[in-house]
Length: 346
Image 1: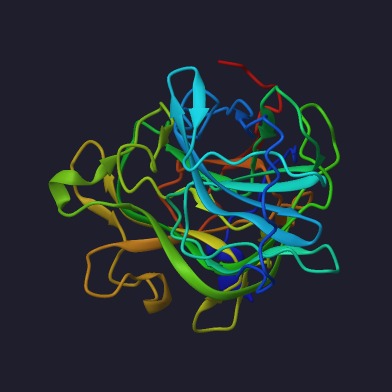
Image 2: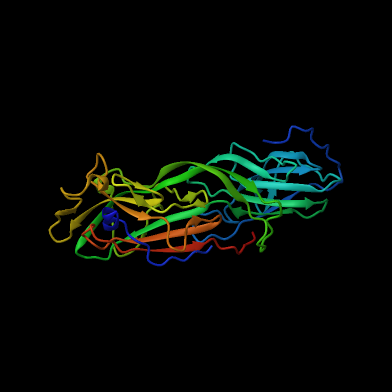
């Protein structure tokens, strides 16, 4: 474990904020009132997240009297309103609406137990997956308001270096051993704006992989760190939406690291002479990136106060690489931003 203590940085300060039924469908009862929709999305702290202003469509499933009433209906923005086809009318019994955005290849089902689940969702990391529920709705002339919530955790890595004696060039950044498949269960209550109720959850998390969030194709495209933090996801791979999940502490078994970590593949140079100072000839193999000239730095995704990514929260890891001798701890810190729960209307 001595080797681990030499290369594994510790976290300094963290703030945690945080298929359809096979029954026969109900025949619609024409009450003279067509079902219409409205949509709200929470404000987001970062520009790439979906907002009320940027959501353009969503998928709706509806059930009444325990039977399907609307199945995979696309509702699209039409100026200041939302439209879909064919138009459906209110039945005589209350309707439960389930919506998500954007469209995906699997669909929810309403089971007698009340669990409404999208099974084995495969996360690619580039989708701000949203969900909304409105239960017990009855005939009315006003739109059914679908208040969407973020189903994912947003994870961004900011890199910087304030040491004028060194030049740090970053080639790749990865999140290690992150589960990217799971089942999402809609809440049984409405996702009403301003309410703390109606929150979905993920289960059956599986298929851990290393997720690349930054990639440079050549030395000329490598990111040279400065004193100004740079979000390595933006204007690169745009991979920053992760399944909410428990995080495992990083460990080292003598040959490799295990657990959830950020891996930064980089080179460090002496700023005055331009000579390479890391990795060196004596750098151990487990700190070298195969088939490249890079070494790798490992930072845990956990902190003493944060052991999971929560649904609807944004996590910003701020890493500062200032020590040219990577055989000593590298200082860095972590801050956590929560998605803004305030809503805006269009």
